[in-house]
Length: 556
Image 1 (cartoon, rainbow, N blue to C red):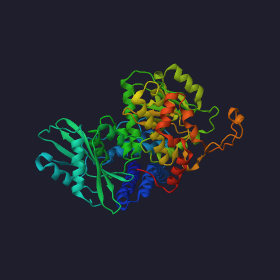
Image 2 (cartoon, rainbow, N blue to C red):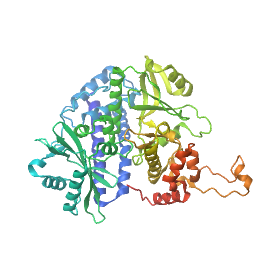
Image 3 (cartoon, rainbow, N blue to C red):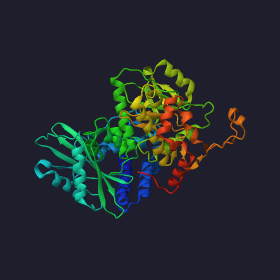
Image 4 (cartoon, rainbow, N blue to C red):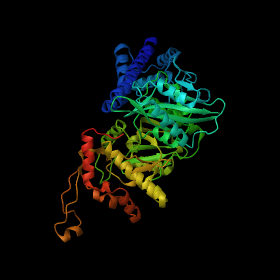
């Protein structure tokens, strides 16, 4: 039993070493300005966990007799594994790895047994590395200029700063302009900066927080690379909404090297109270740990709440059944067994498109999703209407066991207000703002190499800080596969009155000039969209985007 426990932990330790090696590539890519290599490293890292779990399962089956579940044996294995985690720097990740291996061995599909870590067994509250995860700086003692200079000089980004004096002026100018930063400083005012930079795409982030009495405020420096191989401070980011958007699940995962992830997460939660540990573990690339943290939190919430699980607000989807718990800010999406016309897809194609989004740069516009299998919900919490819909639309995906409804496969996302519902009660300057951002969202997604397919407002949502996000992926496709066309002129006057188009339409043909009419029945909204985004209605604009994507000229 000891050898089995040690084999599983060795599998995790091997995974974590490879994970860190892959993460460290971001620093080298930033130094060399190799942005595509950075994107590819981030994508490769996503699949790393599942590969290592399968590797550990193969080794266990080759070395030990583990084909049949022995309850007494596995309770002892779990006990020995707990002992091995004493003094470990990533115990929470190691426990999750153990759970994944056990589930892979015996197909126990949800947290409802004594053989896995339903709750963490080791506290991470005081864990830290030998070199502490953050360092403190004291502007009242050393002066702001000296403090900022020290922060930049100690930053381990691998490049020299081209003009430190200009960088200091940029930061101090941003400090003066940000109204959220304190004007009255407490006696023990300090700036705490994480030791390791965060990397994403073309940017390195020096992540810190201001401590001013009881207040914790974000203090993040965006660092960019000059073409001559030097670095410069692009700007200071400290507005809460902007920082929250920086750490949203709609963006690509950060690459940050850390020996003790729990210490880094604890630091981030200190100035991101609206985020959860599940959000932040996922955002730094530990998406399996994010899933584990989410599910534990969800189980706790179910025990402490009584509201019903019900159909989520918004238009009923033709591919997904979507439900939610109103007191919990997430939606649960499972694929219907059959798709009515005009939908022409399959379950696997839908799943593949969600995987495509996860492995893509989501550019702040594509909602990330956790994928769960065999997830149990208390049966009595479902509304009768939702239960009827589930048994009618997706009977192959649900079963009942011990007063629980077990869903075989689903995706879980942050709940957003559906954009089509939002449009019903917004007007004036608010309408102009959200239509501007809606068009910007379409443009951002396309510039990253994805065509959303179904652009209807019902497939978008709006965040609490007013950002438009796309979340319906059953019709997305690579931008380069689309054939953007201008509608040919009618041959005869009667052509425009015919029920069928007078021109041929291929399966990948897209006619941008139809977008405004198709998307906005309301003439006020349609006219405003046309004013704000005339280029989105032009096939040539989309062809130009395709040219940039083909040359891998992706925007930041």
